[in-house]
Length: 338
Image 1 (tube, one colour):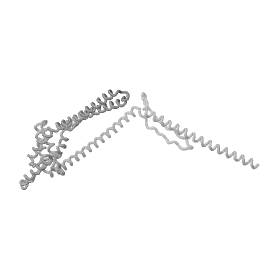
Image 2 (spheres, rainbow, N blue to C red):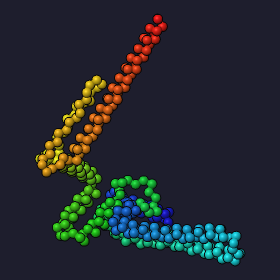
Image 3 (cartoon, rainbow, N blue to C red):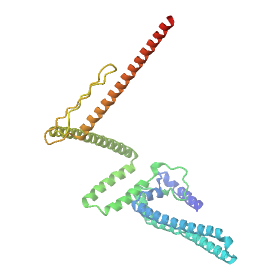
């Protein structure tokens, strides 16, 4: 089939050699697989078919598990069964295996339900694609348009000859036209003319791409500035609310002034306890966090005071012990001299 197609292709090129002397032969190609993957109707139907195929796979796996369980059961009971029962169970297992293989072939075989339903999904879209390709070929004077995903082997294909995106636009236009008003149709026609002009002129396409990139960058910059302003405004509002809440708390007497603490002095000095002044108004009680902080400070002070006291006692004991040792040594020396 491929050789026959190539022979026809070469014959057409030879037949058009004389015309090629007066005008350039226009050749384009499409990628049917790419087009199908970008058509919404086909994607939705394909997703539903994949769910159905997943269900078929689960049924096959269930059948395999049941067959394996029967095999294990027969293996465990073989010594207790008669030959007739063993043959009967083996026949049942073979029957279930054959049934499972038939079901698998029916759903996933080369001529199975999956392949038929895939072809049924693609055919309506393919018909629309062929119609769109003919319209493009007639409107833009193409001599040949090939399908890249078909049996034809394309060793190299320049992207500028790919009209797949043009075909997708035509398919989308047909779908949108049914839902547009007269004014929207007019705007759509203007947009289509611009797209067609871009398709015909690669330099114009590059300019349009540059303009689109600049527009996207400008929109991104504006969006970043807007987000930054919103963040600053939110930060300001949060700060204002916090200050207002703090003022209200002080006014109601539910927050005490920050406690002033003096650092604990080193050995030989007296540590002064931290003081906390709380002046709640009548009928109110200090806030629980302030009380907890005061208790923590008092506990810390008591702990440090105890550590200093223990250290002082230890030093005094060491001094007393050294003094007694010195006196004992002097007494011993005097006794020796006498």
